[in-house]
Image (cartoon, rainbow, N blue to C red):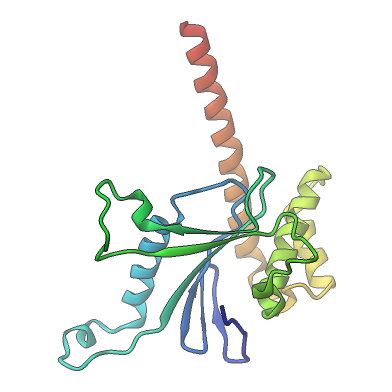
Length: 203
């Protein structure tokens, strides 16, 4: 796989356009999710709708579009391969030799990278590498039971030149997004526990 970042890189929370390639990304996955190809299908359709004007889609001449690539960075605690490819067709009820629609996602386990197997996608792109460092910083502050883990992580990263320019401009948005995600995880665990307790009491 060839991957490199250039000064003309455009990126936001979920996607980047690098050298004419549409690179779709998501937040780090702390839990294993085999449904990422389906989620990416939704993401990329929405992105193409934004990139390609509606009138252009009905022209006789072929309209060039950025080439999509799909990646997930897994940083959870469950065992997972260093690299794994997920396919949308794996979820199809009816299996065929050739599917007219498919989408593949490369999942990189960054939780415990081996020195002998460097993650070249991170080594070649400082933005992605800093993004990984930022997520790990947030996790460390949470695990250390800081009073305001997300705010402190953002301040730390700005001071240590980790996505500093982006965080200076978007600190409030990033903070609100991470708080919402963090609260969701707490609510999800609470709900799962309630369901487990309810099931146990009914037996």
